[in-house]
Image (cartoon, rainbow, N blue to C red; front, side, top):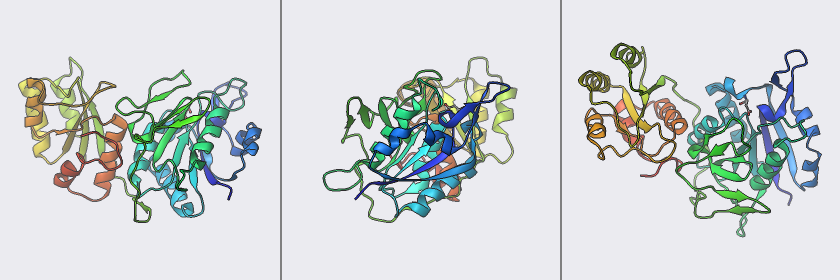
Length: 342
Ligand code: ASP
């Protein structure tokens, strides 16, 4: 049986062409993209596609687009062995994180990829990324189940867990990295999977898609010099339910009385504040320093080693389930799809 793969083309550099007047890159149609990868035909797969109309630069990615991708997967889940999502790199890690929460009981591969150079360029990385993503989506274990049963990002030499990934370079072909989790596969002469890192859970229940995401959430970044007026303005954003607080080092924040008071008042108002570190590697350990301890005492929740992308989308997901603040505070510290290490 030939592997059956569905490509979902959302846009991104991989399918872009130059605007003839401005020379800026703009999204273009899927036929153009496939015409530039004749080698795909050498794969003995059945490949179908669904495309965004129009395809988008991923800077325009929004919740409605995530729902469209999730719906495309859900409606075609039983018909295909795997899914390849072609996506711009700018918000790829956000989409991967969101989909990992939206797609419960996922037992098939959802491989997201794109490229740094358009597919029509001589030195493009798009051809290799697309072909490798298709091969990974088609890969099976000796028992006949999909090798990858989660949302993952394939880029150049690595396959990463989607909700652990971050775009780390606007230039390098190895544009993504998961700083707190090993790669799921290394791509060289062959595709070398790391069976210990891959999701091992086989979900007995059918795929369940959670379409509701609540975007009454925001990020607050710490920096020396942050003033009370600016912080209070952010914390008092009307309708806000959750805040991802980007702190220093191991989850540390200023111990200034006005700062602690402002944070405490916000928590007492019922806003969930989640502590994630600004560092690219490591996580929050609030009992390591007094400055972290003082923050934890206000009721701010530890985000452990969550990426910012996973933290903000996990908040949208949990509030989208209709949970109250108390329940979101509890559930946000429990891993849903391998996104955090406790
Ligand atoms: N701006 C592009 C996008 O995210 C960048 C890329 O695809 O690499 O759609």
